[in-house]
Amino acid sequence: MTEPLPPSPPHPSQRSLARLDWFVFLVADVQTGFGPFVAVYLTTQHWTQIEIGLVLTVSGLVSLVGQMPGGALVDAARSERIVAGAAVSLIAASALIYATWPIFPAVLVAATMQAAASCVLGPAIAAISLGLVGYAMIGERFGRNARFAAVGTGLSAAVMGACGYFFTAQSVFFVTAALLIPALFVLRGIAPTEIDPERAHGNPSGQPAGKPRADLRSLLRQRPLQVFGCCILLFHFANAAMLPLMGSVLTTRSSQWATVLIGACIVGPQLVVALFSPWVGRQAQRWGRRPLLLVGFAALPVRGLLFATVTDPYLLVVVQLLDGLTAAVFSVMVPLTIADLTRGTGRFNLTQGVIGTMMGVGASLSPTFAGYMSDAFSSRVAFLGLASIAVLGLATVWLLMPETRPPARSPTLNRQAVMGPLR
Amino acid sequence: MGDRFGIVFLMTVLIAVGAAAQPDSTVSPSVTILETQEAQSILGRDVRSLTDEDMGRIVDILVDGEGGVRAAIIDFGGFLGVGNRKIAVDWKALHFVPAAGKRYSVVLELTRDQVKAAPEYKEGKPTIVLGASGNLEPLP
Image 1 (cartoon, chains in turn orange, brown):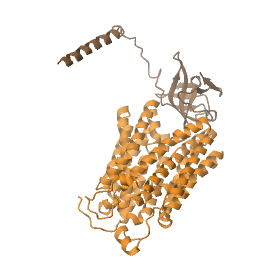
Image 2 (image 1 turned 120 degrees about the vertical axis):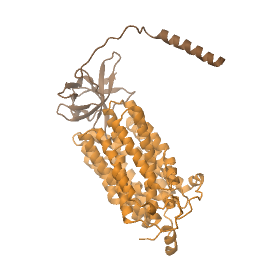
Image 3 (image 1 turned 90 degrees about the vertical axis):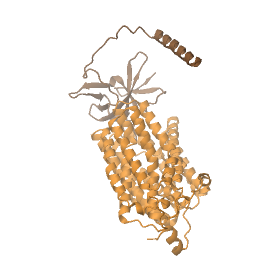
């Protein structure tokens, strides 16, 4: 199973690449089913708020603590496909448990399973991508991944929202579980021989499997990685609470159209991501990472300021489209920067877990901070507070974050040998 | 050996004390049978307005020291978990209409426009209860 592969440039077939597109799309669909529907569904099953809160807290903690072990697991795996398939199956199984057996211990197990599997699935998709296309094409590939994930999330938010509204919240979980079948089917279509496991872990291709990987501690001591981790923490700290806070402002102002407007606020940015992320991926290779990171980050304080000042509900939806710009940049730049920083270490996925943990910490601080600010002062002050955190993050990128795009080397020798042919 | 004896002795004493503390269990409790149409669980039930607008769901009930139900907490508004808030509405503003089917339909004597501006219910803070006349009455 683990026979050493000859050092070879990446040779992904069109079929494998298209299957990866669809896999990313379906995984985004599967993941959308959780999140908002869990609380609603359990409420309809006569669960109390305390029990629901407990389940959500446990799953939040697991998805925070599981990031690094999840990444390490993907780094250790020889077949990213099997890991991804197992993770999707676990998520579908937990959807089925939610739908058919909503008692406390079962749901607690299902929530834990779903959170843990998600910690593995994210890195696994990035690893399959890197293993397939190699460093030279990875920016564009992450752009495509972001596009298909955005289309999946946007579409399934609309479809499952309608499902939950017209049928029951339970039906959403059945739909989620059923999506496992096409997901596994397209995953099988990605040719395993085209995914170089060493490349998928951030090692040069064709390396013998037993080579010791970079020490975690020396990896974490890398200054650019520390700075990037701080940037990501500040980004999610500033970003995570913005949409929920804006949503509650919107519902207090407009009752007739609130639901539709909030739907637009969720789906609109996904459309922007779907349109722009492949372009972001290409430009990241051409311009470098810093300019794009700066633009994406700069949109965040602007959005916070506008949310604090604009009162018209329809204009708020337009302002929310800025979220799409930011998301398009970050969904590409996060895995890409990590790939840059971990070249040759064999720790690409573990490092994704490290950054994922920072993201989780930022995202969990955000609602607490925003909630406190809007209770103690007003939602306007809360938006300004979030915007100032975003400015702090922007300054961190501006002043401390180095360009991580590897310097262009002698094109004939190195591109061919290390990065594969340019197309 | 001595330890085990000690534990058994302790347990015997505890069981004896426990049994003494129990109320007289020989008297059987009274039994009332409620038809499904007479009383139902309302947690998680959809709430509609008089004009059949979607008013969210009941997620909690507030009861005072006398055992009287004072308010219901409804999870109101929003889409896909964004923009929904928990709002306390006066228990007297809720009506439970025995429907043709198995379940009551729950009707709230307020419109979405009246409820939209209400502040969020937060545990541990004074609750602002939305009454049927549309005015806010603080719950002590």
